[in-house]
Image 1 (cartoon, rainbow, N blue to C red):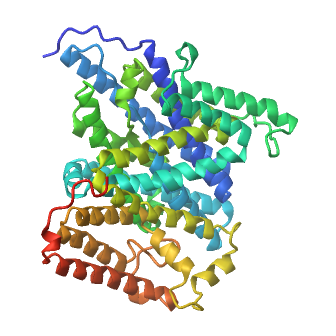
Image 2 (image 1 turned 90 degrees about the horizontal axis):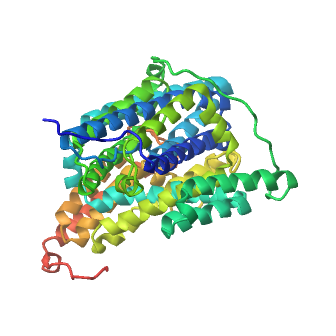
Image 3 (image 1 turned 120 degrees about the horizontal axis):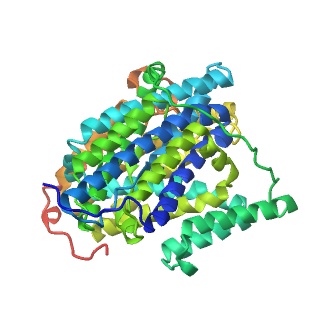
Length: 534
């Protein structure tokens, strides 16, 4: 039975919430475009007119559904202070998939002899197919997400995400900031002042909005004077119109997309688990949303985006209580959904992405990265801190592998030679780095999990996760010896690459055997020392 409610659709606090949520999404879109266009030489028109509209449509759908849920909850409970769950583009997976799926796929297609346009179109199909697969997976997984959360220790779930925060979300934008040092540092300083130090700006003006505006103004004042440290380019005053239409184009990319599932699916798992966590966070703050409804909405929004040409998944954002503290209610998600969704169609989102320097938006991602890394250590037991830190390494390896495989940094022939270099006593360093980085999210989850169980003296539990890693390694689901990260039957490999699945798998099996034998020792059965790792 609904209770009497005077719930208002728009309140003054919704303005602060809108700027925060909108710029979060704009930042992610900016880096998606920047990584593809400037990092991999992707045609800008395909990014803005093909990828952006469908991606933005997913945000529009998700935010409007979450807004409706807030209105429904307010009417049901009579609570006029309900704050809608914020939804937007998932930062880790958008950047991660751009760097580890879309970009490499584009280079691979060009390497097969395709021209730039055809390679970009095929990559778009693969991106769409990846979103469809993630959407279907999230739909199914929304019913068992709680089980995964119970089985895998937090150090594995959050540590893998924190590694992405360190290497991909944090470090990559930091390079952009110092690419335009004066402009970038101004924006970063204001973001750190307002969001990290939590000091309000005068007259309580929105910190994110102020940082972006001041940084952009400085860029356009200093740029023409030659005082920004690079060649100034005036923005192209052009709107990239693109109406999202449902398409079966993703079918053409399904076969290729399957090769990237070891990278893509862990991102989906993390958003499902993250959805559970943020729904609990909202409940503690006073807004008791239905967890399954929250998860199903993000799954359908992602699936819808993929069918309409999108290449980035949506997710409920961490920080619903923060938006509540700003005074936001439901108007901020309505306005954000409409602004991003319509902006993708009419092209002003892509115009803003080109108009605002990435160095100005990058500090927002630095804030996100810091929040993710800190949360991993704060939410996990203090004794599990080494497990969280250990799970960072695969993502660092992936970042190095991306740089090594970029032709502008390491020429293609030189890269191939380094992969097969057998002059040393060990496996080739570049090959090992590439293998450690392939399947990095799943690897990080497994590593964080088994180290956590070791710390807790649950050695046989640790053995299970190590053996899972061994099986996945043997078939290239993680630690693939192929630079593109493809799965394989190990006996089909040739040269020194063939050693990776056999040697790595044997290493995991031996480690599992050693820990299993040690589990019978008296010392292993003793309780862990309190405060040993605090």
